Each structure stands twice: as C-alpha cells, then as structure tokens.
Image (cartoon, rainbow, N blue to C red; front, side):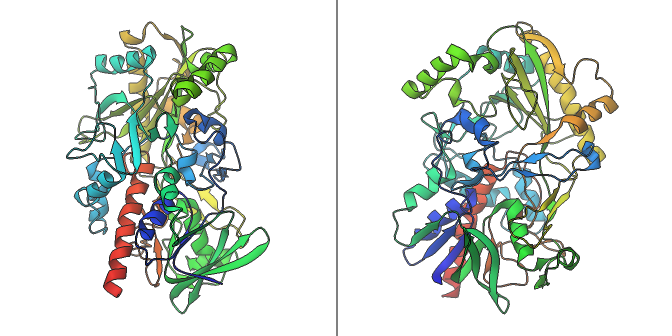
Length: 534
C-alpha cells in the first residue's frame, strides 16, 4: 500500500489546484487519483471543441437526471468532466465570479471567513486578467482570462439593442458591478482553452513530491476509528489502496463526492439502508441541498448568412480551420457564450437575478448541440439564484452505478417568475431596432407564447441544466451541514471536502471561478491546520 501525506480524490478543477498548492511545500507528499484519463484529446485545446466533448464518454461522465414531474418527466443531461482538469476540459470557458452578496450569504450561513472580502484575495491570486492588476482583479495568477476576441456585427447589434431597451453596457462584470451587457470573459490563452490542468497541474508534474494516477476510480474511504486514513480504488479490475498520513481530501465534485461518502457509509441512515450499506457515520446533509442552474434557450432565425450555423459548414469551415491553426483566431475560438447580460427582473431587487448567454448560432437539441442548417441565434436565459433544492443519492452499492440525480427544477414560484420575466426581457431586447437588420422571426418559443402559463410550459418542456451542480455537501452550521468553515467533515477526522459540493447557496455565476477560489482557499486552510498541528 502506497503512503502519502495527502490523498486527493479527483483530478478535476479543484484537484488540480490542490495538487499544485500542496506540493509547493517540498515536505508534503501528495497523491492525486483521477478516474478519467489524461487531457490529451484533439478537441480539448480548441475552444469550439466543447460541442464534441459534451457527448464524448471519454471526457464526460454523461450523467442524467431522474425523470421529474416539474419538467414533464424528462431526463436531463448533466455533463461532468472526466479526466485531468475535470469540467474545465469540456465547459464553455466562461469566467464569472458572481456577486459579493453571494459570498456574504455564505458567511451568514456559518461559513466564517467566507465573505466576499475574505475570498477576494483568492480570486485575485488565481487570475491573470488581460487588463492587469487592480483593486478587484488579479494580473499575475495561473488562470489566464481574456474577453472573447471575435466581435461579429450581430453581437454588437445585440449589445446595442440591450442599450436601446434601457440596460447599461458593462465592460467588466467581474469588477465593481455585475449589471449590464457586454462581452464574456473566458479561460483562454493565445486562442486556446486554458484548463485547470494547464494552469495548475502541468507546472507541478515535475515535482518529486507529487504522484498522479489516472484511470483510478476511488470506491471507498478507509477509516481507523473515526479517522480517514486512506482510500480504496480500482484500476481496471485491480483493487488498490493508498494511505494518507495527514488527510484524505475529496475533490470529486458535487455529483461524485456525496456518492463516495454514501458508498463509505456516511450519510442519511435511511438512504444507506435502502441500498444495503451499513451506517458508519450518520450525516443527514450528504447528498441534499443539490442546486443547479436551469436555463431555457430562446432562438431566432436570422436574415443574413452571418451565424455559426453556416460558417461551420463546407468550404467556410475549411477556411476557419486554416485561420485558427495559422493565427489562433476566428470562429474556432468561440465557446458557449459570446455576449453577456445580467439584469434585474424586478425594480426592487438590489442585484441582477437573470443571466443571458447570446450566441450567433441555433440548434434544436441543447444536449447534442447540432447546429441548424439555416442562420440562427440563441439567447440562453437562466435564473441565477434558484430557491429550488434537489438531491443526489446512491442507487446501488456498486460504485460504478451512477447516483440518482433529482434537481427539483422550478419547484418554487420565485424561480418560475424570475425565469418567465427573464424570457420576456430577452424577447423585448431582440425586438429593438438595432436587431432589425438581423432578426427574421422568433423560432422558440415563438411569438404565440405570451402568457405566464405558456412561458412556464415552454420552460418545463425545453429547459436544461447549464452544468453548475453544487451544494450536496454544504458548508455551514446546523443539522444539514456536512462540512465546517474549514471544510472538515463534521464528526470525522482527517477528511476534508474541497469542491463545488461545499457551496451552501448558488453563486450568481458560472461556477468554475468559484470552484477555483474554493480550492485556493482550501489549500491555505489545509496548510494552516498542518502548521498548527506540528
């Protein structure tokens, strides 16, 4: 059995950060176990390759929700990255921190030292923003952040239409204010995807105190008394064990971290009994408080041949490929969002509650991302801080059987009304004069949809997750919390969770930035506790 100081379960977004930061101290011996493989796929470095990766089982766990009545018993895809770099290998690369109030709420819920002023230094530490260092932005971190470089005329018209509808232009939604419209910031460097593996893991691989094992699927946390002392994992059909002298750190994400805890007998006794797993440690919050962003995608037919639908076909695609490999520019640098919008759907709100993703492309199925043959454009609409809560729980004692994912989307009237208002505003923006040159007609939901009930029906029938799973091992105080403010699992020793599952509430943002911050701060907490114990 191999022995290390720290065993990190998961080589994804948070795991890569932890592997780098913990091995900066040459006294720490670290093992990172990743169930997927290396990040060596052809499409990974090409930003537009995300559409290929979203359906590729080699790099994507391809989880699905259980059918639920709220969405007319549909099963919705829940992509999760598989391989070194995790979801930063397959995501849309959009970098959004969220609002200061998000983190202040964490502090109020028991996450002491997790207010915005507490976490801002870590956001600054991790990023290298193209505008450089400032009071609120970092300029020399490992994560490269740039605004999208391609600015087609249709995107300029969309932003102008938003201004005509009364919304401000905002050049930096990660700055003093989030509200307004502009161009997205993305994790890219020189026109290529810049994943957590690029930013953190690759620079650390040469260190003799870091060992990385891929295709290593952890099946159980091992304990001696109440202390986690290592993990059991499988490589193919071979069962292996690794021992942790200091800590086992779970960084497997909001789907697989609670699953692994339950496989190890940690969780709600009723849930564990339902699949025949003996209770090792009762912890009712495991797998609960699941939150995700639910989005509708409205789209319009476009009059002119200026969209990705036709620019990615035939000779135009060949020209785009040549342009990209010669210059690292052009349409292959696009991810999932071109222009952004953050709006308040009600005047009494202090901050925006709806986020928009504008893209000059359209497709019938959000899961498959197959572009229409005729020109089109899409606006993704999501309520940023959903009240609805779901769960992710074990279905079988077999570690390779995925857990049951139940998001409980649109369960509250607030969630419904926010999304309905957000869709109405999107239509209002596209109907402004600035879009007249491009707008042909609304395809989905279509102009005949006008009442609240019709908008909600459209959302239930067509909405999808936008891949921001979190909250299933939430931080805080009280009977439903799983970790304390230092990310230690309640009631156990030597076991810590550092990933999206610890977020007690949703951030008003795409979640990759917050996960990077959590891992940076988590690494500091681990180092501080080690010093205190020595």
